[in-house]
Image 1 (tube, helix red, strand yellow):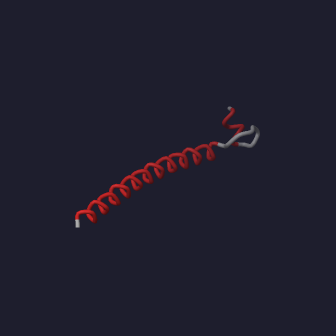
Image 2 (cartoon, rainbow, N blue to C red):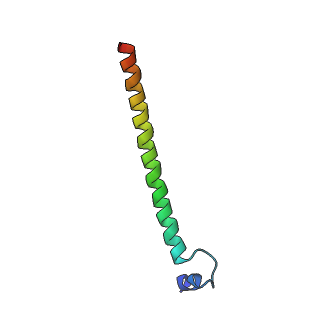
Image 3 (tube, helix red, strand yellow):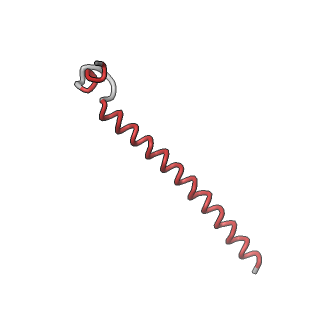
Length: 57
């Protein structure tokens, strides 16, 4: 009943559609942060490999 009232703007707070959108955006943010962390680690790995390669020549 509260959800129905919220969806009809009779109650304060986000509607069902807004809650679903927020959940989807939070999931996307989490996935993007994980991807950024992977890319940061890969970048550091390849930078170290390049420095190691240069020091050997």
